[in-house]
Length: 68
Image 1 (cartoon, helix red, strand yellow):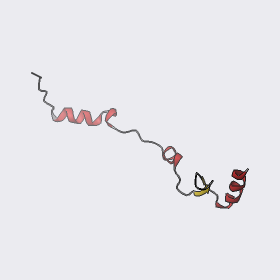
Image 2 (tube, rainbow, N blue to C red; image 1 turned 90 degrees about the horizontal axis):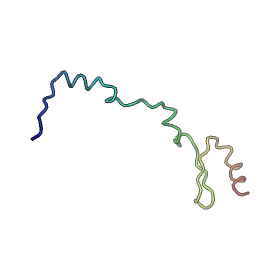
Image 3 (cartoon, helix red, strand yellow; image 1 turned 180 degrees about the vertical axis):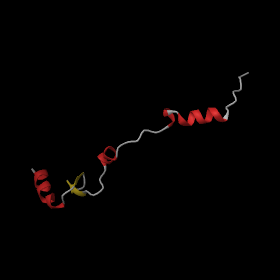
Image 4 (cartoon, rainbow, N blue to C red; image 1 turned 45 degrees about the horizontal axis):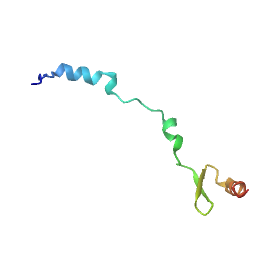
């Protein structure tokens, strides 16, 4: 038989304070690295390639580069 271990209120408090029970805070910059929020999609090659750009005015330049 297994030994039954009684967990007291003090053990629960100790576990709650343990660093291993707290998630690590990830910086917002790292989370937003792959984000497309605030970017404009440019669809190229009949929909086979999508490029996200931040400056909508550069869309024609991007299309010309892709055509080459």
